[in-house]
Image 1 (tube, rainbow, N blue to C red):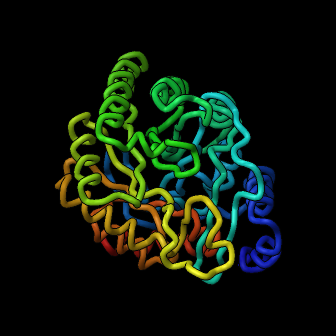
Image 2: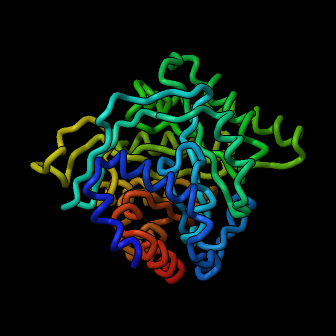
Image 3: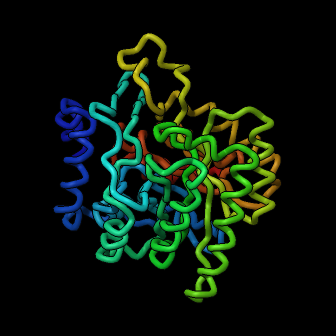
Amino acid sequence: MLYSLARPFLFALDPETAHDLTLSSLHKFGGWLPRCPREHGKAVDIMGLRFPNAVGLAAGLDKNGEAIDGLSAFGFGFIEVGTVTPRPQPGNPKPRMFRIPTKHAIINRLGFNNHGVDNLVARVRASKYKGILGINIGKNFDTPIERAADDYLICLDKVYAHASYVTVNISSPNTKNLRQLQGESELDDLLGQLKARQTRLADQHGRYVPMTLKIAPDMDDAQIVNIADALRRHRIDGVIATNTTTGREGVEGQQHATETGGLSGAPVREKSNRVIAALAQKLAGELPIIGVGGITEGAHAAEKIKAGASLVQVYTGFIYGGPQFVGDCIKAAAQAV
């Protein structure tokens, strides 16, 4: 109800301005929001964790962990913050976020704008949230691609003690050459280093923190097979499919459709579902899939579960649909299991 009143005001603003205002408001006033119970869905046990329901908030909405407590009011089974990089960075020049309301879509080219990993860790430590928290890590834009592993290792070291799980983001289209890390040899090297560090950190902290890999929707069948093989070979704990797309199918001719950046929302739904189904077939249950991309109603969450995902995440659909949308997805996902 409140969101239906607030949405026209927010959508009259520049998208990034509305985004920042919403996070600021959730940070300041989130404690006053009525709490939706996380347990009104069906619990899911994967990666050694118990998720109270199958619907999470995707990374990207709260990059700096500014509004974790406020966002927890909406009943998400888990929250993922980031993407965070070793050093603070401003991201790409503005404007860099564009709505396509007629298609329930957004294009962004934010470019991992964040306050750095130390700032994020401080905010996570200050949060009162006790649920499952994923922390999404990436590389700084000016770190050469051949040194990318160094940045991921720095972030993994710093967030390990504060995360329920850690996501390795190699699939944003808005950091130059980042998706090159999805290549067979590059991915093999990166995952090998990260797995070795995860093992060392587990011994050091006396606690195993699962690690997931977030991949792009713009891959052919051979690339999906290579990804699946690498995930199994390095015993990665889960895979998040998928990030935004560089394609523009479904928004042709719309205002802002030609803007550079990643397209999210309804138009990426079928691409994401295709990758989820292909991964599910190839992985055969050896590790779980978290489905994200194009969920704009509850039925779409159920669709991803049926395609092979154990959990789903939402972002753009949440922006368009508000808190009630989260509840609809939780109910639909529970019925699909």
